[in-house]
Image (cartoon, rainbow, N blue to C red; front, side, top):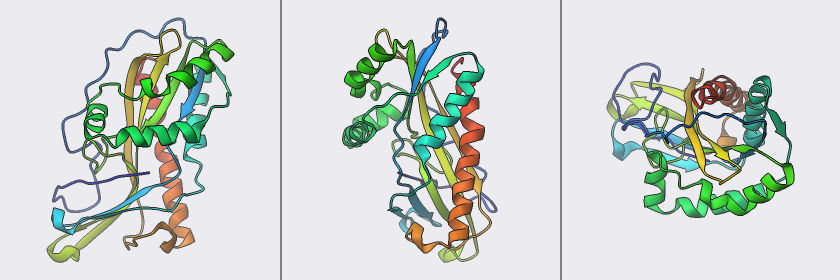
Length: 252
């Protein structure tokens, strides 16, 4: 999972907290009343995308890492569940065919129009999972779902590209003068009504976490165990901090 690009010659550590294009439009938010029972559906995958952002676009490099054991789905769903439970809403732990739904999501995202539509706030994701969500809603007598998918805007990420991963940014002639490394996370969250399976609200959790090392490697496994653990902890900290903020924006 995936991607990061930003073109801005700012020296020092990364300070971008949003994408480099216009912010996504929000769905019209309806007041979330009468919501007592929900399930959380997390479709984030377990792969990260790494990116090296150079002095110009011609110096940029990106790669897809091998799958991680970071448990991004479980981590993010757990943060959502704890927050929502604290608001007096019951969260049902329900099985769903995550791998099948994830592959369908990846296939749909190959369409440029779908990617751009998602980036700018038009809900093209929820209808992909109508069969699974309807079955879950009926079985659990749910009022709705919190659906999580990769975000399309965030720190160092343009619209239209998923944004979960890690990377290095280089500045200066041939990228040797200064570098900084960061882990970053952007998750799009939907509240989906169980009555008609439409998204009533959406928002994103976006942030990056600066890392203490600056060396760049094309594969995640080429980083040291200590460096990989620092990346994992940074992503976890972002999720635990930003997902509750995003849920607040959704009116939960």
